Length: 156
Image (cartoon, rainbow, N blue to C red; front, side, top):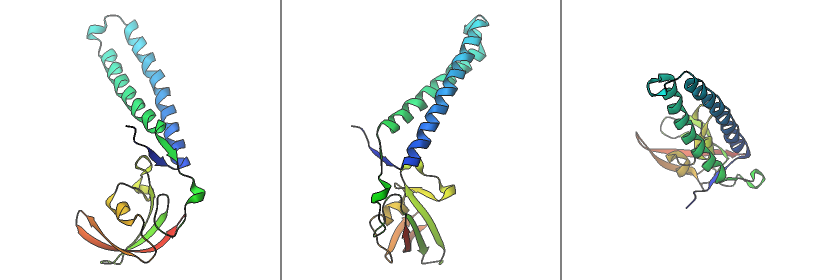
């Protein structure tokens, strides 16, 4: 059974760019394997062994990423609304204990990047926010316990 991943157009483009980068790296590794073979006896050639190991790891990464791309479905961003929290919404929440506000964009697993405020739909916070409306207070279980968050903005 293939697991479908819903993703933004930008996210799919980044995944394809990464796949292209890995395919270019594949050519470089193949070249270094060829050079190692030219040096003679490969049974005791550390360069050959290292290149073959790198090739194996890269091929596995290419296979995984190719599978993710094949099962990706682009979300029609024109159909996203802000009446309730859903994927690709920018959600601003306020921690009701310490009054801190945070802003996250809810994205698919491959697109998650906390440094730029993109959290995976699989995180406890995103799961707790999904389907909720502006003004709702949601208790979310985090490692430090349950925290009440108020949804103060939902945007695209």
